[in-house]
Image (cartoon, rainbow, N blue to C red; front, side, top):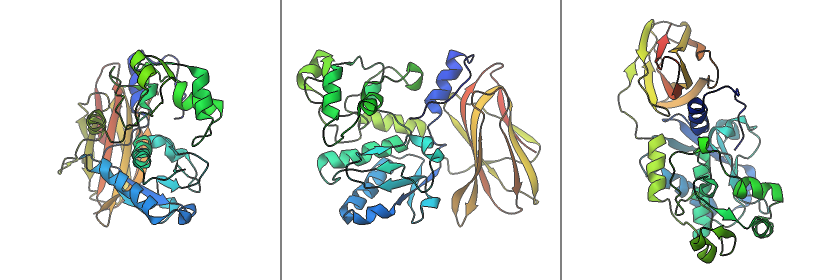
Amino acid sequence: MTEPILRPDLSPDRLSAILLSRTKWVNGTVLRYCFLNEADGAPAEQLDEVRQAFQDWKDIGIGLEFREVDQPSEAEIRIGFRRNDGSWSYVGRDALGISTRERTMNFGWDLTSPHGKATARHEIGHALGFAHEHQNPFAGIEWDEEKVYATLAGPPNNWPREQTFHNILRKLSTNEVEGTDWDPESIMEYPFPPGLILRPEKYHRDGIPDPLHISEQDRKYVKRWYPPLEDKLTEIRPFQSVELELAAGEQSDFAIVPSETRMYEIGTLGDSDVVMVLFEEVDGELRYFTAEDDSGADSNARLKVRLFEGRRYVLRTRLYSAWGSGKAALMLW
């Protein structure tokens, strides 16, 4: 997970809201995934297990959609199967900053074993924007650090010390996690053998068993960020403003059907941090058109776009936080 560069004078509440939401996709996004050429050497059952892992997340009832595509340039998630490179994924929207020629996810071992099946679901959890559960600062884990470094330096991970620190020992900021509960059964938790954790005593003695399934808390959490979508969208028209009565992390969705072809401006009003993503409907499916993220800035988000008469567009706006007056609105010009 990359660290954003944010102004040091942001209030704690505003900073927390931005950090908590920044890797999450706007709900309703169609995430396209592609198996890169190197996957040609992976058995078909490995690819099928990844497909099933995407379906397992979708079957929870979330608002995201997943589509397999053939062209890497069309995919937000690009999957490789390089052995000896471990299993990993970029976290949520961090993948958008990666070249379309490069992987954003890799599987370095067999995915058909119980542990491998869990690995596929774990890495897709990262792609949805979720961090490691054992790095939750509220877990209260005290590590035997040298034992952790030695264990992760061996197979199948073969990690150098800096990677072990980043993925295991580094605690997330309290601003980056929601709530105070640690879920050792989360699919985003790693298994650990006895002896690596000094405290709590239970996990020193027993270790943490391999979480093999998406937990109940995982299910609640993913539906918190990606709830089922409303069937009918509110249509927003030129020179109409709509209040964004949202709590931090919540989203509003609008339809735009231009009556004439011209340049339009879409923007927020008031004191708010938002990410706005505009999609165009093409052959019955929403395709990414453009986006704006004004988080941490004191200016409002603005999109200046040429929209075409008779076409249908969908604007999805997720609120990071409302500050100052606490009022936020959206307007089309």
